[in-house]
Length: 154
Image 1 (cartoon, one colour):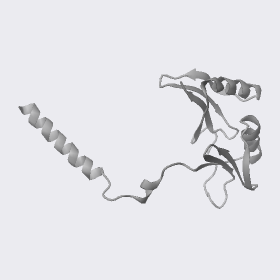
Image 2: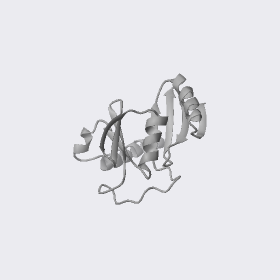
Image 3: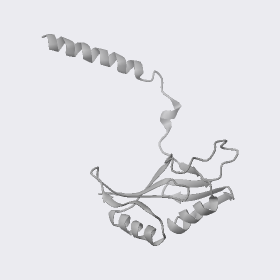
Image 4: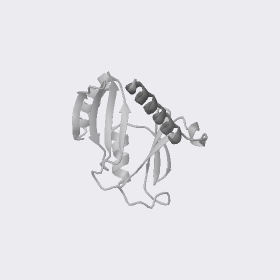
């Protein structure tokens, strides 16, 4: 009897707390359905462009200026940009891992990507590995030190 009463009180208190934390009005941000594009602010545009086009074989979709280029990846866009008026921040220190991009492929392609990266002289942080959460992963870095992953669901 005592435990049932405590349990009921606990549920009520938790319900009240949840209501306090719940938003009181609908936010216009609830309309967000996807990430449309991702921008990597680069230190060395030539090195980054060479890496993404020559090593990762991404096709340039458009070049808005020498400071902004875009690649189409499915329904998303990956842009490389030099910091300028849009960002007063200093470049991220090398090795800070402030960004990770994960590129989804088939399971067989994870190994093929690893072979191609090695052929191109890119150091692998980890070889293709089956993870306990159901992914086959491969990790490496781009010339600016951003963490990149090629993965497949297995």
